[in-house]
Image 1 (tube, one colour):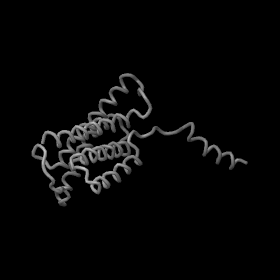
Image 2 (tube, one colour):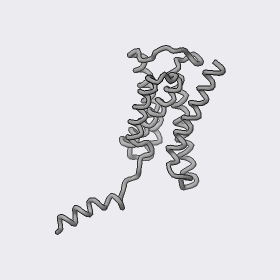
Image 3 (cartoon, one colour):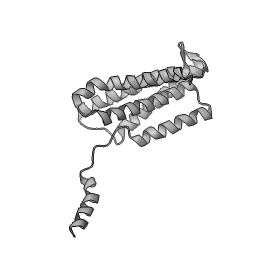
Image 4 (cartoon, one colour):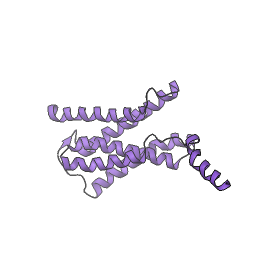
Length: 169
């Protein structure tokens, strides 16, 4: 009887003592990676792919930071370093192993690199602003706020780059 009680409590206890959910879950990161691979096959412009690759790398860096660092003071210092480090390592490896295919330039940068830089800056700033608003008001304003705000900002940037490419460059 005692074994059955322990088993049932083991199954039920996560409902009451669940750990905090990650803002950028591993499943979302994997889905973004698969979507990026598909974008090349569909012929989506490299600058727009770069924006979504930046969101993917940003989510990976936040996920890595959450997994590695538990101390809040250390997080404040290392978070931007991990974020920038993942971006620099990725861009460096793209150039080192000739993964950048030149399809044109925007402001002197390859389209993919431009999209990654623009998307990376926006993704980080949106996350910081979202964190500050949650801390200031002590709550999220609607369900899935972090995901909707992050994806919405990437969508708006993608539309902006699309307009920039097709109408101004």
